[in-house]
Image 1 (spheres, rainbow, N blue to C red):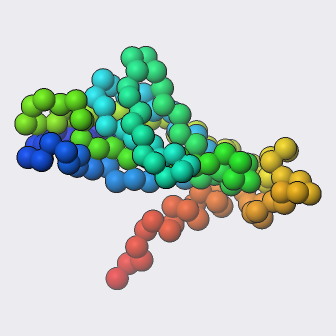
Image 2 (image 1 turned 90 degrees about the vertical axis):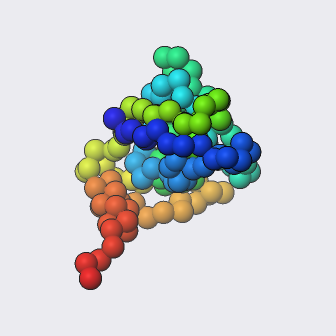
Length: 147
């Protein structure tokens, strides 16, 4: 379970400090159960950031880069980030706990354009690739070579 520790708030009440910088996940879908602490935001297709309020018993669903590729960009990966809890009235932002479940394709699955996502008027944008090759290639790009 990812934990973001408590921290001190800014003295400027209009400034919401990032607790986790924006990113999108590499896999297909991420299911995220949140506590009652707000701060999760997602970026709309027009670039606007919107708050995703926690809902008791609810699960936030993020589309990942793998599913975006698989759907020929019909489904868009969701850039998201975590900011300080705007509802906090104290000088300390509370600890934040989230439970994430990352769903990925089986490693031998070929990521070829899904039926209905490409055709004569919308050709496939990506070459077919096995899920394992795709995800390991994405993860390898996040590691700095040894000095």
